[in-house]
Length: 84
Figure 1 (cartoon, helix red, strand yellow):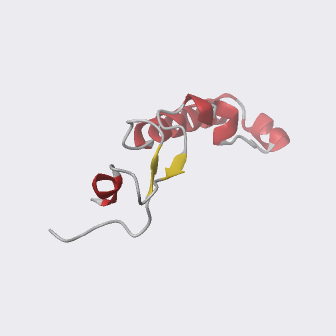
Figure 2 (cartoon, one colour):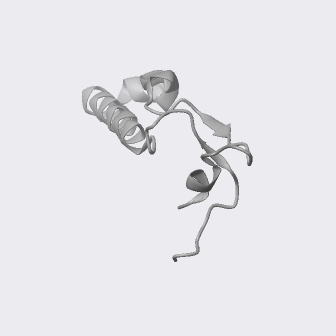
């Protein structure tokens, strides 16, 4: 593993390593909301078909990482960015 490296020179815009915690928080909110509806009224569930998605619960712009960027091979940070 000492010689392992990334295949593609792509990294995040911010210092956040990943969005894993943000995704967990959103999915927990979604499950909580679905369970609340299920406990309240099953007929209401059948009428609405419970079409909730992650986008209804949160906004991806609130996540820690703001997307990805391509790192230029001529950049002084290229070697560091390609390490795993």
